[in-house]
Image (cartoon, rainbow, N blue to C red; front, side, top):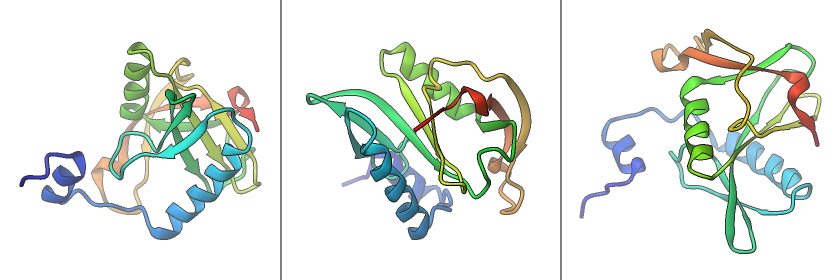
Length: 152
């Protein structure tokens, strides 16, 4: 039987997975803290999903969520940026009636929340990671001013 999932496609096409077990543990710890502050229940989505979690209330998915953990302080930079493909996917979900939330945990232990599927980035640049030598890590990114985040 063929695996027709995105996971199967990724494995068959050797898409690198940079997320480590330590990364997943950090994200899960942040998700627990978020869970304590929101109405719905966070459910982890499958590996290679576009977003990390779904938020469920009364057996209905009310939004999707992306959780990021950062090694810099929340006040170190004026903006937080995301890949434009992630932003476009969030806006497509919003258009279809499913909003997408962004949660960012910074090294100063602050967690910021933004319903980024409803907010246009303040501006776009070309940026990203260069340390892994993967050209997919660098490209067009949308910047959101930190002061737009609601701190949990």
